[in-house]
Image 1 (tube, rainbow, N blue to C red):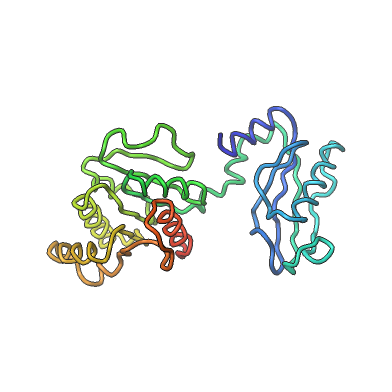
Image 2 (image 1 turned 45 degrees about the vertical axis):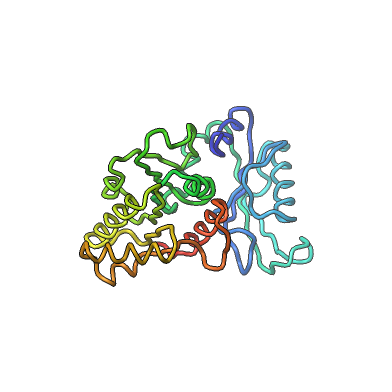
Length: 270
């Protein structure tokens, strides 16, 4: 069950208080817009944990007991009185929620427009590990493979799977701004996908990141073949191979997935 389905389920059974980070001065544990929902016994989301979150939960539950929020906005200094040494000031908004607020709540809180699009070619072990990691981050994943029945029966909310044969035929339909990750079961497929991505980048300049899984020797062979297809040195220089944040060792699918996710998170917005 997604967080939105869980929150909707809550509100059909009773009220909750929404706590959102409205303003941060100096250092704070979470960014503006971070939220948590509090009912009489449970919590969804987080505004950063620690004593700040504990006091905000207490404030929210006091409001639930009273039948209304006690303060629409409260200022919390992150100093000795809270047992936190961030040194900043956080302003929290408190909002009453009930079943009448379900419609539109996801769009208001989710920030979907800011989620980064990721196109992942390959449903193998690393691909599956990556989807598991990326689906928990502010990203929308377009997951593509040429093989039938390669995708799991249940997908996370922000994952869209596509069977494409030939697999590179999906490249023209990628969302503009997609971060592309190429890791199919076949080097031949990888090469065709990469060539299609470079062609699209040449024509539209709307794929800010193209990553190819593999060794430096694989990349050297690919470069020779791509030159034969007419791609320039400048175009080849846009490809990241091997992929993943440097310095993270290990070839287990989960390790690679974490290294690649960290690399994507470090990219500037397109």
